[in-house]
Length: 106
Image (cartoon, rainbow, N blue to C red):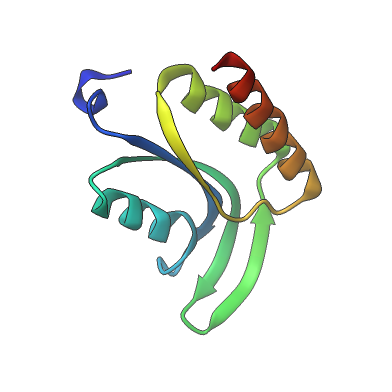
């Protein structure tokens, strides 16, 4: 973990990306940062959306979501996780396996 974030609580958000900036990862990062915490993220889906609605959703491959989770947890001391869009049951199962592994190592 880098020294610049070593004393700051690290919060992971797992969610979709909102191209309009009002929800998803974008909103989560704003909210986490407002608490004085360091925000890191795992993106599960890309959306085409604005303030009027969602016109498209593109899911991220589960293998790449896992790669993001592995990258974050191998380097950062995450103290809290906020879960947003887990687009598919496969992504939910992937997160559940990771959560069980985290709890067993504590």
